[in-house]
Image 1 (tube, rainbow, N blue to C red):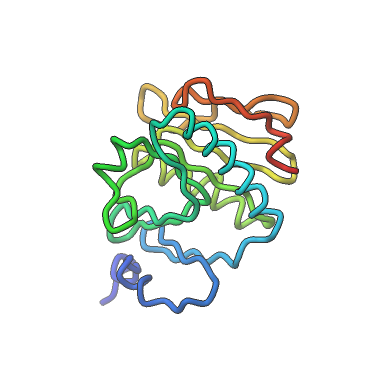
Image 2 (cartoon, rainbow, N blue to C red):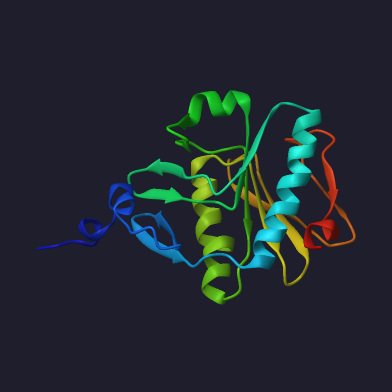
Length: 186
């Protein structure tokens, strides 16, 4: 008799998926498929990456990278929009070009649709919380804001604040980093 656990996919299964422009991710062995991101989504991604890259050039404590695989175990492998990791974390967790443990900051840019938003705001946040991500940013193009979730004393990723477009995005993980939120959406 087959059980639900027997039906879970693994990251090895995902490696066999076709190169068709879709993004394949696994969370607890369940397959999540996303189509190629939109031009607007990628423009926001680039704006964030540029702001972070400029900061990290002045403060060479780590790196930012888009679309890097994060493999937590056989049944959990995701591709965040952006990750930020310190050099110390990368030296311990970056194997074969993929992270095998949590980067310090993970950033997801919401795509339209209730299922996409549920995946990013709930399912991925729970995964990142369970796996030690220090901070999680959910970028909301529709509301032109950034939701920040930070690890609390109990080790949970809890909602810290929603940063509107007329305010600055900052983080304790990157001292003195600040970018005005509306500049991410131009």
